[in-house]
Image 1 (tube, rainbow, N blue to C red):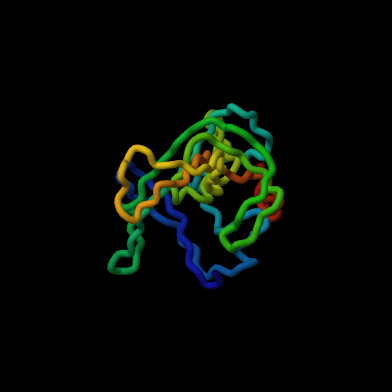
Image 2 (image 1 turned 135 degrees about the vertical axis):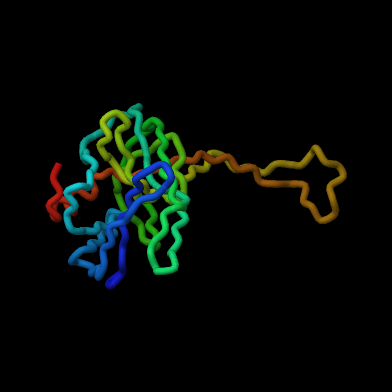
Length: 205
């Protein structure tokens, strides 16, 4: 992480072209702030007056509210001959759905630890791989309420079934199989978990 280079990419037209604001000489504790207890990493860069920013919302959101998610999932970035970054593989994608539930839960993090008692929102549409960390926002106001964590499965049923449609079975094939029925939910971590860390960097509503 120390010494890494980050690029904040902005797409300017429908062809996927754009530019990037490069942040070099990254140092943890100076311009990169890690908060694994709430699955957040914050990157601070120089101000850009021409760059629009989203509005934040730390408040409660009623169940049934229409939410959106936006980002560049499935991105395929490539380096040019001079080491410059090519953006032709970026496609901006959005989706929307209904806030199904809000609750506190434990979440597994990428480093194998468990995040305890995290406030999450659950939505009824699937997050696409690559959306992780992206904003989840109120579809009416555009205010960001949460950031994508991923999805979870809940086992509804598991039972042993007997094969009856094929008789006889091929040699070496068992006559039984396990039938699984699972529910799949997309989860996002409420922005309120990052609020003290954002405000420590001077971010205000």
